Length: 125
Image (cartoon, rainbow, N blue to C red; front, side, top):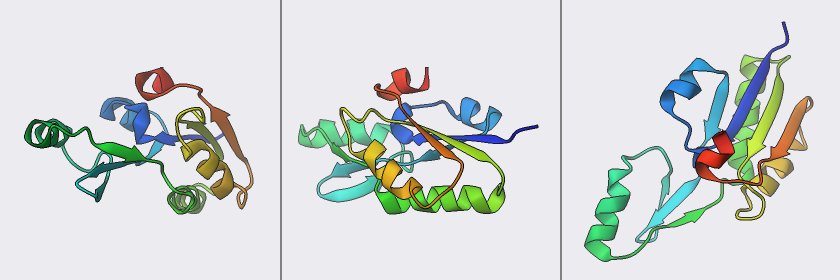
């Protein structure tokens, strides 16, 4: 049986149950609040609402960088050397994350990239 591992960014907003049920690996995007960089998914989402309530500022976001993708792809290769990796990426129209994934993927074989041309739940649909 062919082993396929799906990857995407935290911006896909996939449910934990979906991630646990299927071979999906998620790399975090970044949320910036008061010039502090937080990895998306590593803090309660209510912190974002609390931040806005206190400051009236909307947090900014930044892309996943090539080193983070490279670490993810390397980890998958170590765990599943013969797997096909299919990365379904956050739209290249709104973020540099997809381009960063392509850059990181240049060093790997048997990896395919799909630009979802969508964000959040539309990416995971």
